[in-house]
Image (tube, rainbow, N blue to C red):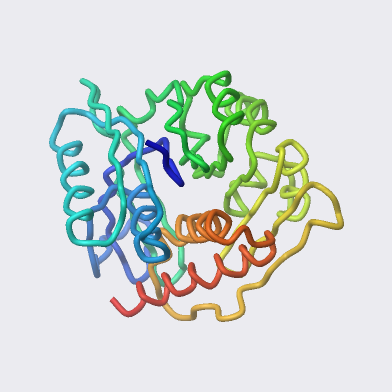
Amino acid sequence: MSFDLTVYGNLILDNTFCVEQYAHEESNICTARHMSPGASANVVSAISRLDSALNVNLSSIIGDDTAGRYIEKWFLNFKKLNPINLNLNLEKTNQNTSEAVIISDLSNKSRSSIVNWGACQALKNLKNFNSKWSHILYLDKLPNLDLNSLKNLSDESIISVDLCSSNQNLETRETMISMLPYIDYVFASFEEGCCLAQQDNPYDASRFIAKKTRGWCILHSPDGSYISEGSHQTTKKYNVTDKVTGPVNVLGAGDNLATAFIVDQIKRQSEVSESIKFAQTQATEYIKNNQKE
């Protein structure tokens, strides 16, 4: 069996608390709370909304515990209730399932988290599922990922990765940079990209990262995205034209942007500039829907 897209990597049970405006060392009032399997759930949900005809495969590791069973049940229920061709390859181990407590600051459009890393970080080898596109979630949080495994997969599939940390240490940065020659697309926030590239601004960071890859770097923020293929000529900023104002939960917006970009590339093979415009529009719509809830 072949797939249009395989999603690998971090699978975390997120327990999210929304607050109007977070105050440090204060008892903040929760305005909304929800649980979901984090970025993987955001990607799957976005695909269901954007193009349910895609054949999607999810490959990760969970623990044989309460959190792991919640995650597995969540995806099985999602398949029943939503139009999507989703195949689950969830390996179970004796390690605890990764879990996170997230505080979403609505007024400042920011989030903070406490993560108890577990089973998903044990991912070492990227099994080849015969996918056109392979998307690796949180490359900077997969310390055991084998470089040769990534190299071999890159011979058969388009590779994209997402980052999640803006305080990577030297060892993590060096490991990720060694993997960039086998990656076609890097998605990261401005802060994450600048940290990886050790640059002060997203323009230079996007160029630095793109030069190391075999394709493009996309750095995003609520205001817009920088895209680069490594040269000054290909490095451009695309501003968000319909920016959301007022308090809103932005958690998951980056996942929706990356997913929309990937879907547009798989189905329409658009120019990168057109794919990022489409992706920004979809991410904005996602944020607007959060604002209504």
